[in-house]
Image (cartoon, rainbow, N blue to C red):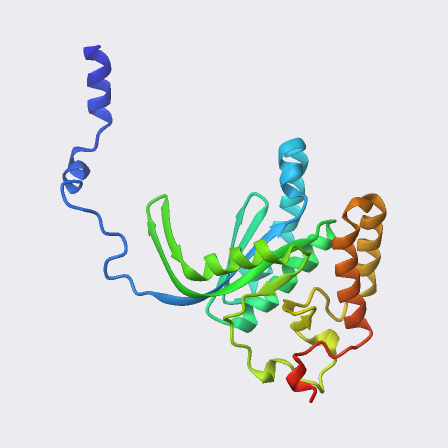
Length: 239
């Protein structure tokens, strides 16, 4: 027993131990920022992690590799991955919309849809060695949206003020970052090089899993409306 106690004693950093006599206040003097946070759930990934772990790692490597563009181009967005969830954090609304659109493209290209929310609010993050402490109103808002929407889309929290300039009627809807669809403001899942192919992929997914037809139909309806160049904007802009 004495031998074990001696080993434990050797493992204790006695100099650092003295610091525990004072209360640790990680958020003291740390400025409170306001951030946009996207919480994205990759649908079907949790099942893969549980049942096909090694295959999931291989697929995630493909996703991460495809999303490394943010390391080359400074998008102003930080990316964090926790199993089947992806977190995006940014000071800028346009930037987070662009990257959220890229995530939707990347995941669908690899056979998965995304459901998520984007929130805005107070945000504090502190790094302490290997530990990270985050208190985020923005993240809570994003998670709440993800819980409510049910469908495969990335929707904005209702407290996010979107300037009318973000809905330019003279711009091709396929080039817009945002659409107003079925009562929600959602990030565009399409781009100029990703339209019909996206719909075809989801139609194939629907054939493979018809029990989720309602969710696949939602995506198909949204994508079809965009390709048909419908003005998916708030009503007051059309009056």
